[in-house]
Image (cartoon, rainbow, N blue to C red):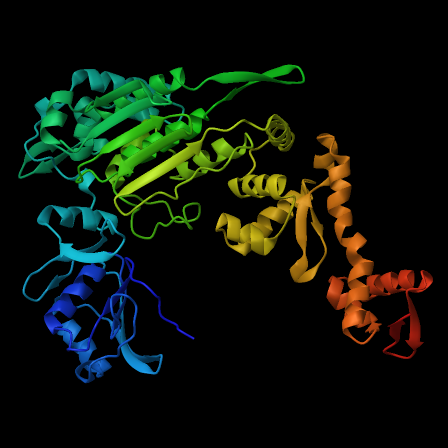
Length: 550
């Protein structure tokens, strides 16, 4: 059975070695992979995946490891081994992600990318891309450095007024900052830095306080657009290089106009249900500006169309962040100085868990979860689907949070959302759908069970979970509850009979307990029912009593 991939991708490379693949080209490929995502290089495999075997010169795995270490700067430590596939030897080289920028000994810096047809290639890494790479690895904070060509005169006094107003009015703003002078405030928020005794604006300072014309001149990569499409008709299409605080205000105003609300009655109260959750939009927008790559040409884009809302920003996820660990990875970003300033101003989430708010904004209304699946190595894309709210589920969540006197955790909300849609799930299935660790999920489920919101059905590995009778009853869905809780027991007799048929007509209590994942006493009770119905009879007694089909 073949153990290696059948085709190349960003982390898999095949190289033919029939005519001895050149060592210099091999080093280039390894440097490119180390400067990207790392991966595996298979020497002795054709581009189409056909295995042809490694050249005898390259069968010395230790020698190849030394060759790579001696011809890379800093040295790349690879792991090489000869493996056998389809009765042919090939050399597998495991290449780690480099924690810095690597070059060949001759000075070539390279990186790996996918071409338009999906096949990989190694291309030069240009000098300006070094900053991007170091930012991705969290080794350099571009936003904290001085901006070339900028001076303190490039700060806009109107933006200072806007900044102080935001700190004053936002709940999370640090009010003690208001007592500082402009110079002290700039230093506290890292809007300025001192170089050779002279004060210069940082990238963060210009992004927040800079004059629009100077931002456009000095930072041509800093652009933002807001677009609204109805069918093929363009309703709004605006682009700006304004400082971030002004952009946030403008875009929130635009979104407000294209985010209709409807009122839902909850007893004596009326609650406004928006098309897109406002807090989720705000967090998505702030994340786009806070974590984008400011060295890369591109635009932070907000698009509202018939399908939903899309917020995209240049630059991929920072190293260590993936689609699978978005909700659990330790908060960190490409621009720590900018992120810290936005938190202290009161715009960004203090805990760095704005992603939780984005998910919560969809879940509490019973809508599809936010989608990051179209994110690439050069663009982060958040999509929030336009969908009708589930008023019953929204009321249920609101009532429970009021009863508990605190918000439900994001894990609890995700579990309740899944059980609402899927009816019953095992812990393994929940873990797969949420990309969360089973240990964390079990803790959240136990809390939901204690709160009377979830029930467990069955035991052992087959144990599954459903919404509790209380939830079904409050939503006038008693029949659905009975159907879910009764489905196992209704099937018990059929399953026991089927087991007996596969065992020459015989069963015992231990067989039934293992089959149904129930206790021995419960198994005996099920057997007695079948005996009383005349479907089986007691064949022999003793410690291991057997029963036989009639």
